[in-house]
Length: 142
Image (cartoon, helix red, strand yellow):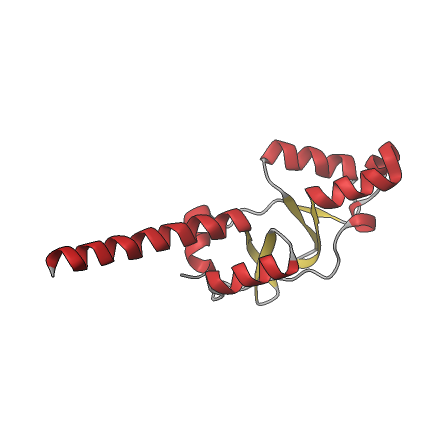
């Protein structure tokens, strides 16, 4: 199974912001949309990503004044992305090894979706259950 299968199930909707978005607005969007990260864009180009963790880290250092900071000051700039052809095993390895939970999906330098570790685990469990059921049927029909 690959990223394309995840996107077919969840869609390609991605909440994005630009670098001038205030941290308070980003926190509001994360809460409102019930998501864990926002992709920061510069036109059609992925410029960064800001997660709940980024916001908490910034608040712990700068206090309440951080809410007036622009996303461009706190975002992760060196964004790792994936493509629709990447496999779930590749994503799991990358996400656990690098300790992040969201990967923008990029094709031809354009953002086409986002996957979370939750998406990967959900689809991997479904894949494992399907394989187990196929084995049960194989054994039962001998």
